[in-house]
Length: 341
Image 1 (cartoon, rainbow, N blue to C red):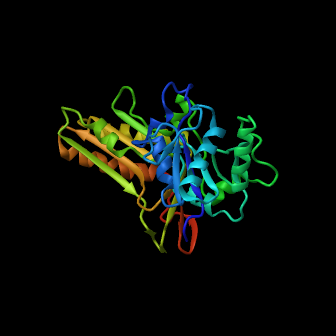
Image 2 (tube, rainbow, N blue to C red):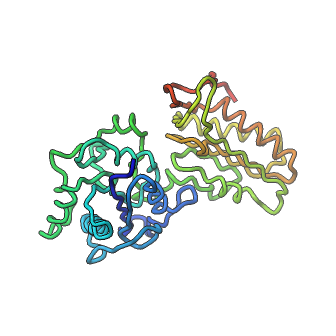
Image 3 (tube, rainbow, N blue to C red):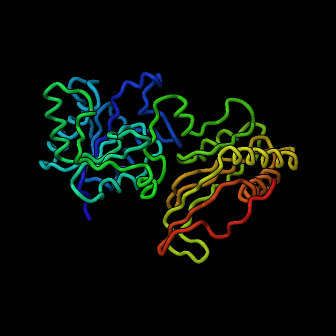
């Protein structure tokens, strides 16, 4: 089925609280704006950027530049209509959505009916991660011409507001979270520690395996061993697995991961740097769920320690896997009680 909606990515915000352009900040080694643009690929008929030209999409600027998100949405939609000669709904996305997935975009596009579809998360509507109907896009243009600058009056009683629990059940949890502050960015973007030789992290964005390997590469280390565990398309008795969801008790999980690394250092004192990174949330086939990197002067200890760390993480860290496959969904097979380190 051909896509029946457009896409609009907004990158022109001032980012005053961040102190720099949010669109260019990286999560999982990819700029935020580029991640959002990639999530639109294949799900919409055509997408444009309104802002600074960082996504690789066709780009326009609202007039005057910097006049706010309502003006940006209108500028984007007018450009799409100019290019195609047709009016279609549009998925409108801010550039600072690090947990956004193609699945959420596709779900917005395919939601039945012609109304706007707006996630309603923690008591707040999310108009910059939503599908706007043609009627509401026309309303936005009229309100902008009348001097309105706020998004608040666009959506009325006819709007479909999708509550947290339904959104989680349909496409996953936390996908509409944005990055407004440096603390927000730190929560999503697993970054190397400012000091020390242990990098331990849990996050809902793609894991930076390449960055972890570079961090572990030091002049005194002749061996850097990297293990990446990816989502496969089957499990025991379950063919056609297409999605996993990882959940954890994050505090205890972090502590157990640190204990695993400490035990590895005690057994192989020559190892230098160790990274243990685990993904949480929804993943599709081929995505990386866990990364372990170990560096040392010699390969034997790096291989042995790396193998121990991944095995111990799977056996001792309270992280659980929920699988969806061709014929059903349930917790992962082969589950076992979490043992002590």
